[in-house]
Length: 216
Ligand code: E4P
Image (cartoon, rainbow, N blue to C red; front, side, top):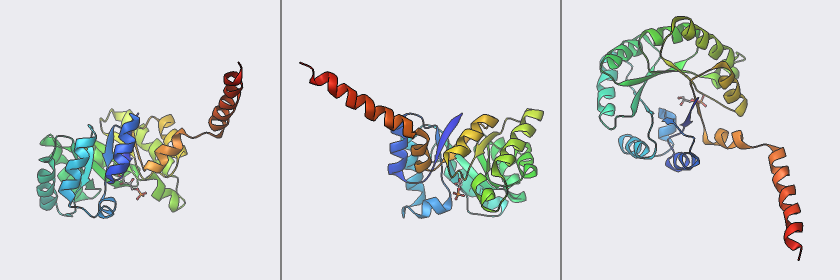
C-alpha cells in the first residue's frame, strides 16, 4: 500500500519523508492557497523532496484549458500527476493526457459510476473523498469497497487513491479493502504510530532499566 501526504506544506512533507514511508504527495487549490507561494515554485520544491507522484490540480473547467495547464505543469518534473475534476471535460482531458503518457488523478470522486468512468478514461489514480461523504452521513468506506470490487472485476489498472482521510481507521479499513494508496494529512500519519500501550511499555521499560543501571 502506498502512503501519500495530503498537503502543500514543505515542512510537513520533509518531516513525513524523513520517516521513510512516504510514496507521494497530493495537493489541491485549498492546500496550495494556505502556503502563500507561487504555485509552480512550490510544486517544483516538493518534487525535489519526494521521489514519487506529486499531484498538482488544474483550475480550468474546459478541456482545452485543462490540457494546456496540464502540459505546462507536466514540464516541471517527470513525477507531476495532473489532478482533474470528475466532469465530462475532466474525463476527456484524462484520456488525452493518458495517451500523452502524463500521469493523471481524477479528483472529487463520490460515486462508483464516476470511478468506473475514470478507469475507462485511463486515469492513473482515482480519488474518492471518504471524509466528505462521512460528513453527509454516507459511508465513504463503502464507496472504497465498491470501487475496489469493480476494478478487480474488470482488471482496471487505475489505482484507488483514498482521499479526504480524517483518522487512522480510514487508513486501516482502506488497507483491509485492498485500496492501492491512501493520502492523508500529516496529523493522521502521526496518529497511525500512536498506541497508549506502546507509551506505557516504553515508560515502564525505562523505569526498570534505571534500576539495572543503579546496580553497582
Ligand atoms: C485529495 O487529494 C484532497 O486533496 C483531499 O484529500 C481533500 O481532503 P478534505 O476533504 O479533508 O479537504
